[in-house]
Image (cartoon, rainbow over all chains, first blue to last red; front, side, top):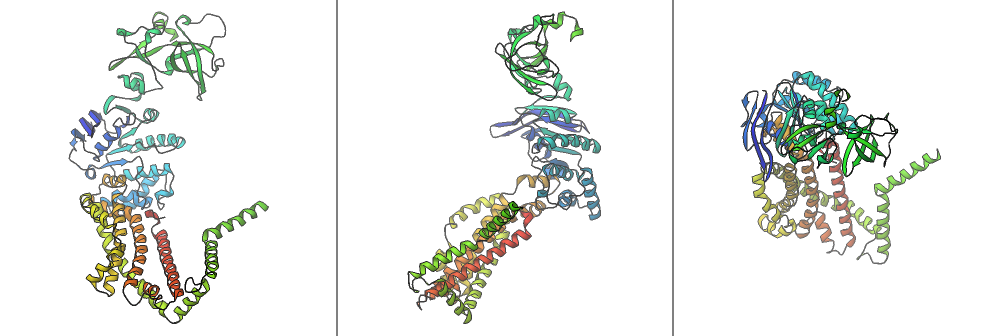
Amino acid sequence: MYVELKNINKSFGDFKASDDVSFEVEKGKLVGLLGPSGSGKTTILRMLAGLEKQDSGDIYINGMNVNSLPASERGIGFVFQSYALFPFMTVNANIAYGLKVQKKDKAFIKQRVDELLELVGLPDVGKRYPDQLSGGQRQRIALARALAPQPELLLLDEPFAAIDAKVRKELRTWLRETIDKIGITSIFVTHDQDEAIEVADEIIITNQGRVEQVGNPVEIYLEPKTPFVAQFIGQSVMIDDIGRLKGFTAPNGKGTAVIRPEFLEINKFEDDGYHEFESAMEDAVVEDISFRGNAFEVRADIDGIKVIGRYPLSSPKLKRGDSVKIFIKKLYTIDGGTTEILVNKALDVSDLYYI
Amino acid sequence: MEKNTKRSSSGVWQKILRCGVISWIIIITVWGLGSLAYDEYFLPSPKETLDSLLLLIKNGTLWADIVASVGRVVKGWLLAIVFAVPSGLLIGNFKHVRWLVEPILSFFRFVPAIALTTLFLMWFGVGEESKVALIFYASFFPIFVNTIAGVATTDKSLVEAASCMGAKKARTFFTVVIPSAVANVYTGIRLGLSSSFICVIAAEMLVGSNGLGYLINSSKLYYKTSWAFAGIVTLAVIGFLADRLLQFAGKKLLKHFGVK
């Protein structure tokens, strides 16, 4: 393993930022540290960089224990959320900073700076100052500066947080491609699950200073291991009493569960014909409907249980107050610290062809 | 077309208003009208003030006084810069020293230089030294305090960025901390200059035989109120020009250090 954290603990006063954190990162992987704000993800990144010191536990980089190594000797590239470009230096001087520290000769520095400006797609901004660049450009320059001294590990703290939505999407793809091109092991922090799912090879989900789950995006999405992950990922809705829903009985009498929009099938039957699973469907009232590009997002009320689902654009038109029938295909039950997938019983007995 | 000319003419008006010409016309008019109600020994008119000014220029007194005052200001102020900036940079960088110095600073902040005039006269004599020392004291504090603040408020992420790129403390201090403090140091230097001007007048009014403060103070001996006015106007003009010059230089040279 290239990066290893073993039983890391860190407190700020009464606040436990890291609670026995352990994980490993393979060489060359792009890993996303995902969690709500205050979950301790940035602290982990800062401890890795040597900007913060853990209270206990060990950090290994490339097999070497770096506990007592200051930030200046770890050789890690760090991209700050606020970019932290030196405002009193030109772009060229910013990128050259780390190379000057390494006492490289002038010709080499110039060549490397040009190379990096080329890499980040901004070959003409070298003589400008950071305040003459847009947010997205600053982000690219911050990355170029972090990469200039050829670090073995790149850390990015909320790299897209300060950039407007449209550029953010573009920049995500670009970052993924750029990191692939160099093949550098990278860890980035984000609170945005779409960002993590889209960009990362592997996601580490943190909550209240603990690591909840580590896995690739598909695994995390389809098989959440803890109740927190089940709720946090996807557009999830928590319900309290699944015993009230048709086709489900609560295991051990505990009935808390999470429903994702894709687990619902919303129907508006305009004829009285035969419909598969109709007896297993819940009667619901549409509370709100909004257009989401590829589908409608429907908020509905099943006798007091509020759910969110998708409704195809091609289906009969829906409006607020309409009665619909909702088939709940499956849900994630939550029992203490574990979570499990529960499939509607109607699907168990019928032909699997219809799933 | 018509709309365009309208907009540009209102733009011209805004420019005139902003450059302050109108404000000056108003002040001088009010002053002129006010002076009609009093005799010249109480409130000399703008015209009488100008006449005195021309007379003082002609006989060379004004020029000699300007040179004396400005010379003292520049000496004391430059001396203060030379001492306050480096010590402020160092003290700001070491928080333990800063904590040691801060209580002393906040104590002396409420002791204006003028309050020390008598002491300085006893310690440094009635010559140039006491005046320069007083100006030094007056401009040292704003420069020192602002320099310390500039260092102490350096954006932490800039320092961290430097250390992630391998920079050790000394290099970070020279390449990141000092440049970050420049805007504050500059503000301190400007404030120091204005306190120097206040101070030099007070010192010259108390002792000495030349300078603008002496001119203003001695006008009472000759019952020449208009001389005092001439001195005050000269002082205002010099102070204004000096500050504008400093501001212009700051904007031109230190733009990228956050000086606005």
